[in-house]
Length: 50
Image 1: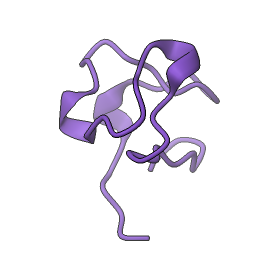
Image 2: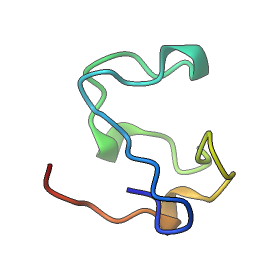
Image 3: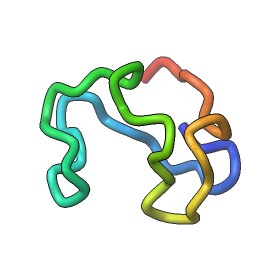
């Protein structure tokens, strides 16, 4: 979950429009990736249980 805006990355869905295939684990998302909602960096995310 993004600590800035609250957007949640869903590993099952991925982000195909950004080149991240469905099923991509969070650890495999590139470090230079940014939040599609607010532009926050990956380091501004925190793992949450859903």
